[in-house]
Length: 180
Image 1: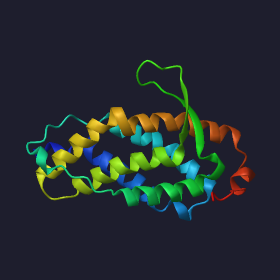
Image 2 (image 1 turned 60 degrees about the vertical axis):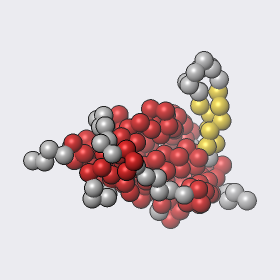
Image 3 (image 1 turned 90 degrees about the horizontal axis):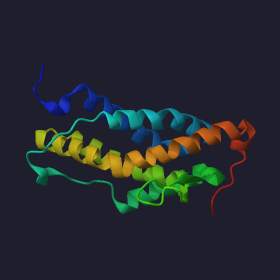
Image 4 (image 1 turned 30 degrees about the vertical axis):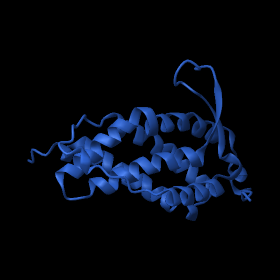
């Protein structure tokens, strides 16, 4: 058994689910809208759970941290997801950050998912590097971004996904209007 803390079960399972999520979003344009939302209903809570179980790791060499997803890649994925989501892209959520906890905000599935993708794709690509310093930084950045960023985005998505499942009839998924 390795003494490498970056190879613990919780981290390896997080890496596996994050990789599955990123691959899913990258290939989403080949899916029907109903299959897309049905898959998200399982992936979103699983990702949140895996993220909540990440251990604290202090990188020995914080300068080894890197980001990989470019603005162009973010925008390309966002546009693909927005086209797929169509008229189901927008949802309402309560902002629990700060003092405005009763404020209802309009969110976008495509924006939330692409934000989560960016953090997790950066995590995966850095984690796959063979150096321990890279893996330590990957885990530390993923954990640091969980509460304020990608975990919050996932927690906003789950009620909206539940609502879509409860209120959208299967034939309504087929009536996709492309976004122009």
